[in-house]
Amino acid sequence: MVGYFTRAVSSFTYRNFFKKESTYFTAIVVTGVGFSIVFNTAFDKYWNNKTAGTKWVDIKDRYVQN
Image (cartoon, rainbow, N blue to C red):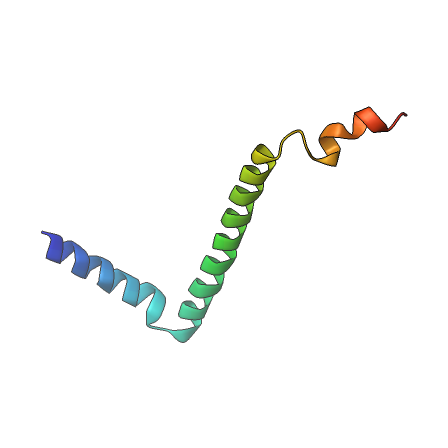
């Protein structure tokens, strides 16, 4: 069962992404851009939660009068 599934996934991946150089290149670029967006969004969310209360946006009201 596992061997059939692995062969099916490998065959699907090869036929749809690696057989032509243009689709291979497109898949790499799309994956890279997608990973970059997801990683940056997740890290920014983590960093904002970790440093909450210490950024200028959070303490500006104490020092600036409108």
